[in-house]
Length: 392
Image (cartoon, rainbow, N blue to C red; front, top):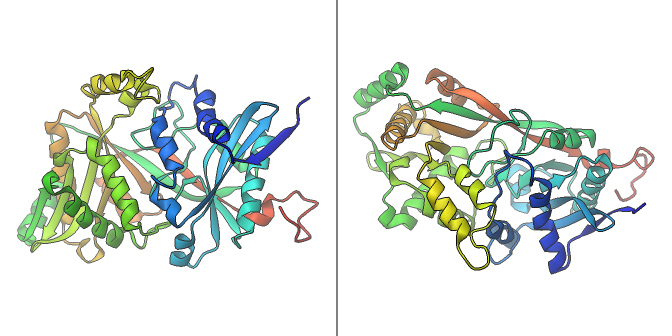
């Protein structure tokens, strides 16, 4: 019988195996949305991923013989630890067949590498910070994920928990039906805000000045999220790369900035949910030099009837001034004009009580839960190793 091994990714062939293994594992999973392969390779490229200019990532593959059983990325983000005064390491890009031994060896390999960088705990999945895709789906496995949200089978959270991880934070997705009439409570709140503070205005992002507008959004993002669990400021290069990635699918009607006396104080960013269109491409824009996948995406995108509200924030000093209901009201109006039937609001921290109250008050319902796990590195050792200080 072939021996189970875990080894770091060093060669081009190993990197290809790292990317391709999830496509092979999920080929029969109807609800998985295959990400574009080009995006996956760029994520791992120092030339195309600004995170890698300051963060360290080590990739591992688990094999039995020639068969790839799983993969993991060990992530060291010194900016996160400085920002939070923490000693956390992260794992991401985790994919594994339902094999507890393979999962345990992948986590131990990631833990060994991170221990050398003086971290004491392993947190994830995070690809590669909370500013990117993160979390493990722990319920509603019979529904596809929205755009830029993860999907995994039920075996994945079970494998993670079997290796000693416990929940650190839950992230929720909420559904907001685009009904013909806005919720009465939202109308009243928006009207009261307008009457109380006539200097509040909400406008669409000016796509003809895209960089300048995204600079404003970045400043708002950092001010509005700075106290959130897991937050770490994005570098200018990171944010610009994200902005360029979103630009082809951004609709100005769904990208809103709220201002008070001309000063930006909040924003809302909603994208068309192109996940069904991406499924049609099967992870490739081109096949044999022909843009088959791109044509399928463009054709399917005409039938999109959902959106994903991926960011909504107001700076602290204006959170009680009515800016939030105005942003929500105008987002709802724009979505209905575009013919959307529903919006997914994702993700929302499970401990963000003010946001949760607001979502419930306007008629949203919680649909999915994504979990971030944590484990002390010492708990990844086999029982016989724990008393000493040997390597993991």
